[in-house]
Amino acid sequence: MQETIQDGSLVLIFLDAKRNWIRKVKAGESFHSNKGIIKFDDIIGRPFGIKVQSHSAQLFQIHRPSLTDIQISLGRNTQIIYPKDAGTILLEAGIGSGSTVVESGTGSGALTYVLANTVGPTGHIFTYEVRQDMYEGAKKNLERHASMDRITMHLKDVLSGVEEKDVDAVVLDLATPWEVVTEAHRVLKPSHFLASYSPTMEQVMKTCKALGESGEWGMIKTLEVFQREIMVRENKTRPTTWMVGHTGYMTFARSMVESGT
Image 1: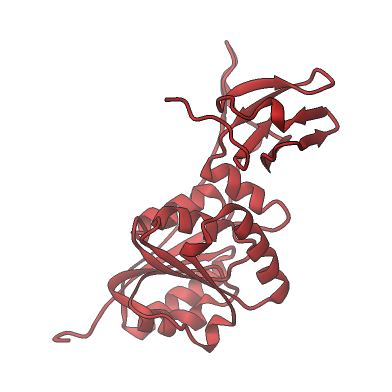
Image 2: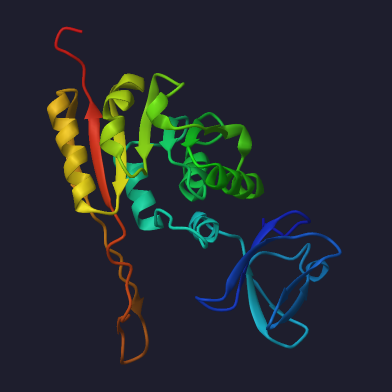
């Protein structure tokens, strides 16, 4: 059975790789761009994946947005954890349906959205953000796209203490993640994961040192993931000249308990 576009549906309006938009369909309203106008009433009831012409005869594609589409759209005005890294964090930290996750900081809410979508209706995300402006921006983004019954937002410095306990994963995107190592261990279930995302090697070195010196963590490792798109053309298929290279380092560690505990 085909899934059709409804009043209230999120759609990806695609012109090309650099010009695409995510919008909520509203009956009686229209999408406006410098390439023309598309009336939402003209696409309601039609299947995702259609091609439509704007009033100026420009051809657009209308798709159901993927997780990647929405994540990137949430971070267009701020730095985000890229999809290639978000996927690695989910798998390496064992985050799945029903997981309870503590995240800090919230940033634009892009990773929060991915986490909430992944844990599903039986899981929950508790996200901490210390900056008022980022908190308000993320709240607006998430209320537009996410299932808020899966998300609890704290306007609070995680260094002052995590309110939750017995969580399945702790995900950090902070300037000083090494300062949260002890607190993360306190709230994690045994043999569960801390995932720390850092843009610089100096941050990684300090975080790994803190993890190792505490004696409370095992299986410590740091990864970097590269992504290169291939331009497929007849008789001239090759990698694109631009690629998503260094975005950040991901450090993972598993919580341990004392022998005999």
